[in-house]
Length: 370
Image 1 (spheres, helix red, strand yellow):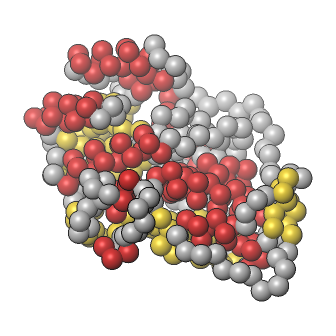
Image 2 (spheres, rainbow, N blue to C red):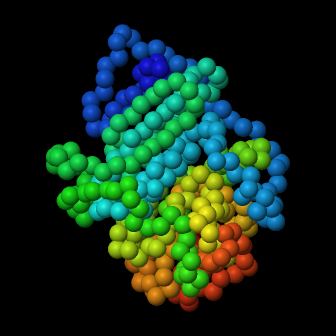
C-alpha cells in the first residue's frame, strides 16, 4: 500500500504538490520519510454523482430514522467532508470522558483502509488525507500515529491525550499548546463523566449545540446512502475556530458535572444521536423549530439527518441559566430541544418548545445575519 502514500498525484489533470505521506508526517511534526527510489505517479479523477430528484419528506422522519444502518460505506464523492466529520466526531467522542484535559491536549490515531483498483479511489484517498491534515492543523491537534492497510475504503480516528514530555518546545508553538488551552498534567479516562443515555428526569433540558455553523446538507450522509438518494452538496465542515470555542465550553461543563448525559452528533445526524440517548429506556419530546428558524431551513429532514458535528446535552432545569450564560459568553449558539420523557424509549417530534426570552432574542438576531 506504500504507493498510495508516497506517490505523486495528478487529480483531474492537476499535479498535487504534496504526497499523502508528506502531509501526514507534517501533521505528526516528524520529518517525512524518503521513499526508496523514484515515487510513482498516480493519475485519477474525482468521482461526481449525478444529482437526482429524490424528495425527502418531513412526514417520513420516523421511517428515515429506522433506515439508518449501523455501518455505512465510505462516501467516495464526499471524501473531504466525510473525513473532516470523522475527525470532529473522534474529538467530540472524547469530550464525555472523565479526567482533566482540553482540546489542545489531544492527539489522534488515524487509520485508513483503502485500495486503488477502481476509478476515483486514489483521488478520494488523497482528498481524505488532505482534509484530515488541513482540519487538524487549523484545530491545533496533531496525529500521534497513522496507518494504511488494504481494504475498505474507510477511515477512523481515535483520540488520546498528549504526554507532557511530548509538548512542542519551539518558541512559535501554537497557542493551542499553551495555557489555558493546554493543561499542565492532562489525563483522560475511558470511563465516562456524563451518562451515554438520558436520565429519567422530565424537568431536565435537552440542548443541541452544532460545532460548526455550516448549512445542513445531506450529501454523503448515512440517510442518503440508506435510501439511495444522491444529494450533490455535503456539509462544509471547516470552521476550526468555532469548533474550538464550542469544545472548550462544553468540556468545562462536562468536567464540572453540569452535563448529566450527552452524546455526539455524527454519523446519522441529530436524529440518530437522540436515538442513542433514548436507548436506556428514557425517551424525549423535542422540537427543532428553533434550529429551522435560525438557519432559515424549511426541511426538518436536513436538520435531523445532516452530519454536522455537534452534541446533545442533558442538564438540570436549575442549571439552565448558568449554561445559557456560559454559552452566550463564548458566542456559542445553542438550541433547547425539549425534555426527557421517563418510561418511553422513543423520540417524538413536537411542534414547539418554550424557550427563555433571552435565547429567543438571540435567535431573532441570528436570523437577520448573513
